Length: 196
Image (tube, rainbow, N blue to C red; front, side, top):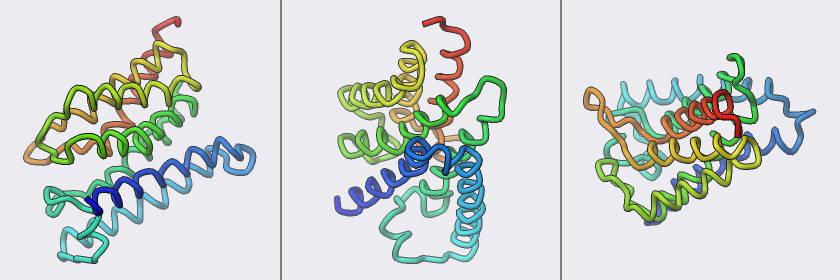
């Protein structure tokens, strides 16, 4: 349980990136956020390449990775990949920071809450009440940034990503990747196509 709490605390630290931008937008512009995430992305790709090819086994990997991550990209790397995709998608037409920020917060705040309440086993679908909590938290996180329908769509998408972890070619599609990506995509659809 201590390792699970440690993993969740590391998750929450990811909220510092979008919150720093919100708190000091003139100093920490979206370009700064993108630059930081670009550097973080390079670092985690190198660390994961070294870990997976050489068997590097630092204590931090033992404590912060799960059994199914031992031979696959670890959750922390997929976390950075997911939020980096969302951060750089801001360059696409109609994708804005007001969509990217709540998508990042869904991962940084919603997922740890859900994880502490529900199963940490990647092969299980979480209990219905845990999924309802995840939906509520994610929808509330999105509500200050996007219209209500888009917030609900984002909450549904993040909850789906959190609750169902399919395997593709033997690899678990980790929610650290899918929560921000699906949450942002769903909110974008809501903002684009739903008038409320």
